Length: 336
Length: 107
Image (tube, rainbow over all chains, first blue to last red; front, side, top):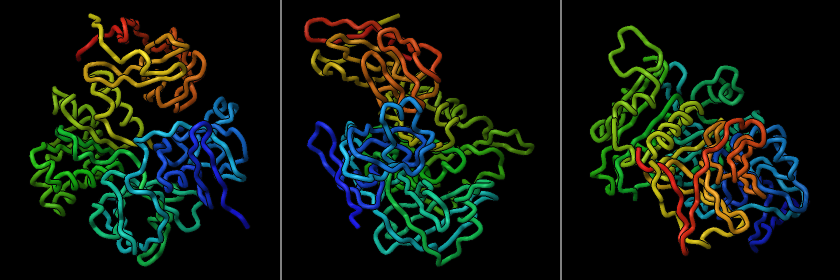
């Protein structure tokens, strides 16, 4: 059976082949700068237009595609597999050319470390090196779970074939149910990655601010741990704001104890959003705490953030609209 | 107070194209070339934060990449659900080869 199809990009001369893959996955694996963000059907960044040919949609109700866009023949590249050779319209962008081309690998669970009542760090091992940039994410294909789940790595790429993910147990979440209750040490899953543009930019001349909320902790830990080790960033101030609901949801002490260099080089400011008796630290939404602590000169920082959409929206409003920080200095991936 | 800010050269953006203006001290702005005439609006969708220049520009309409809302680039008026609030627009001035906008600069 011939499962390989050719995709031509209208008006560009670009062409790529897709075999048992999404259009987006195949394009990135072949080094094309296909625009995307969440790779999970939620954001709409990978929208393209079908000029000719047929595609099969993996998730026809994906929230990232409006009815109007659908009527106009547009689809999401992360949720489409070709059913024939196709001609499509999309504007490739050089920013999206992957520095490490994503690959599909088999990974073995080697450890699950509980961090809080609902956060656990899952550690997987692959025979291949884990080539990713701090802050990037991967798609996890879990046994008996339909569709992939996107999670950001929490470790450093130099760790050989190690892929760690700090994941929050979502009540009723089918993906996390498998991770938290069924998967055992030695079990295998498929990892597809790396993806994402919200990675550490060590060449930036600015001080670094990381903002994490909830399970947005994972990529921020990777970025902070990489930043404190990068010789190019030796003179930079590194500040990490982490927001949680209550003191029980925080695990920053433990993370710092595990990485003395991070404790020494980075300023870590945890904050809780629910007033709690006996709490001596910062209280409020994490973007408010950041605004209070930084006070001024917002345009002098490189910002990295990850968290629930209300948090990333509030941070964008604050930084882009109120503080007029150039969008290029704000790095995040949008997840829904 | 509004200041005149040089954005690009005439011809940097082809007809039918748009570009994000990303400068410290300016709110995010989208610059459009509609059949040779330049228009500038806020680049942030008024429904939910998203960059309009990551979306689609067709005819006189820019469509947000996130939820498919759209705006008239000449007036900033919202044209389709879920957008209800108009985009801020900015005057564009062409002098010689240079394209300027008038906008408030600074925090």
